[in-house]
Image (tube, rainbow, N blue to C red; front, side, top):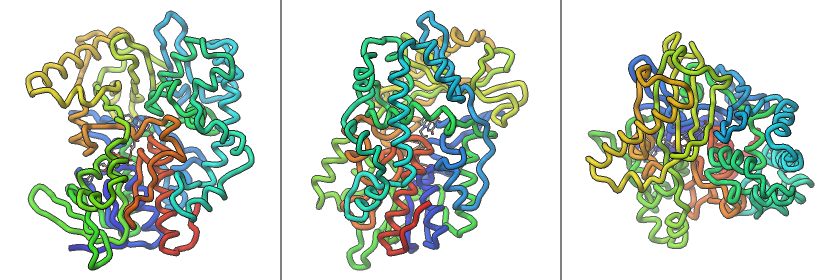
Length: 501
Ligand SMILES: Cc1cc2nc3c(=O)[nH]c(=O)nc-3n(C[C@H](O)[C@H](O)[C@H](O)COP(=O)(O)OP(=O)(O)OC[C@H]3O[C@@H](n4cnc5c(N)ncnc54)[C@H](O)[C@@H]3O)c2cc1C
């Protein structure tokens, strides 16, 4: 039995970041991770001579004032080496039109918008105004949704006058903004927005909250930008781990937490975990849970019997997507050159494919070769309801279909693949422990985003949620913001000042 003030479940970016902040603030922290390495959906794996990013391939928030940057400054650790993506992505609608480069330079992107989507400037201007208002608010570190007076006070402090105006749009969607701007029939613009929004909000124009969508549509441009990490995505987790080691966090790999119970006699949480051979128990006053909240139905079984409405809330969370991810490698000379590491294209079969190609010599493949990762969304239940034989057959079929799409889009000769493999929701479940391999948190529609989402504060004292199902949502930058929010709440609950960055 081991005691610490805080136990964090999960060493993805959310768990690593919250453990690092709280430990730096002097609390004793134990971090438990079921895998043998950190990173979760932003981790990597090795095959032959290649290092593949498991899920996340691009990072927001590394610029000065960005969330990773602010947290790394506070932790006093260097940011991982990275280059800005310019263009952040090239989007090919495969409609006979010119592919759309999403430029980093603001003016270049505004000019491109006018070329690609004539007459759309009012929509982009409106998104920019909403985003600017959102950004000041987000930088003031609000707590959302609010559950008590302290949360409310933080929300109130974060508000600026322009938020009152944008607040009117709290229940609006991106499609409502298009309608306001007279663009509700602009099919090409809607097609483009659908592709991009699905990546960041898991929803299309008709369902993405206007306040969320306006911001994610501006993340590729200065003063923000998306970044490509040198070596691999793992360098983000490795940097955070170095902070944990400096401040004495106990990091435990290879133990899966299987139940959480409140120990009434000692007034603390009892966390049970098991490795391949042994069982372990931990005690802590506060527990940060960064696995998807849907997993609480299994891990919090007994306490949930006393909180039926919370149990129902968890049960009725909307079904998130799963992902199929194709990991491959090629000689650089055997693939059509593109001017961006990221490419998104429309496919009749899959809707969209999002492709990330490594830089020659960036550490992911030997010199002269590149890794190519392509991902598509899939319904998780389509993969779990199969017997072994049909599962293997279906996986093989998808490998073939995805290969064909990529061969046609990037002029690849089928003989030239050096490596190919496919991860399905079953693989994601095994790798990240996410139930049914769900990825990317909750869809950011107006009923879920911000004020209406799942709170980091739970009805159970000392049990806190953090990660991509909690405000402000998915992505390494999003979960770092949620880690900062939960750390501030915990520190305030312990009376350790009003911590902020
Ligand atoms: C295919 C794909 C592409 C993506 N692309 C991008 C991108 O380009 N850029 C971007 O910013 N984001 C991207 N994302 C999203 C991003 O990766 C995630 O939102 C983010 O990494 C989630 O971090 P997290 O810490 O909340 O959760 P996770 O990464 O899921 O980490 C949770 C950790 O908890 C551990 N765990 C779970 N259950 C238990 C248990 N019972 N006991 C112990 N440990 C447990 C898991 O093993 C895992 O390590 C992508 C995601 C996917 C799947």
